[in-house]
Length: 160
Image 1 (tube, helix red, strand yellow):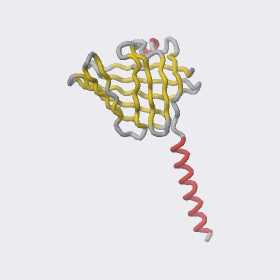
Image 2: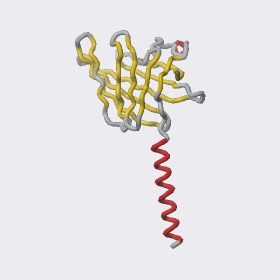
Image 3: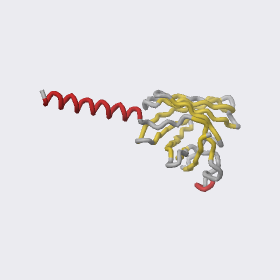
């Protein structure tokens, strides 16, 4: 009987640990505004890796929805599946469709979004890593190879 209770106790701990692990995914929901000079210090262009000066993120257990306001495209909404399955977010650019296919993976508390972009047969890829720093700011590191020349940038956003 004691052995049975020990096994039940261990099983309960494993299930509780799995539940806590599933619930401990970082939430990036909210309105985010770029911290002044956070991109320039990284030697990038000030665009925050495609997120712009500000953006809004909505998140539930299945998806992350990011809404930006881009001068070329206007309001742009991208929905990412948080289970690792493909997310398709095509955009219209000058009358042509730009295919964007993303996959998300979790690396602990960090969210990694890898997007393949196909514009008229020219294929490139971007990878964004999202993580909250110790002060609650969102740090987004972006690596891109869209023009044949790899680029990287890092931007910090504050909530609100």
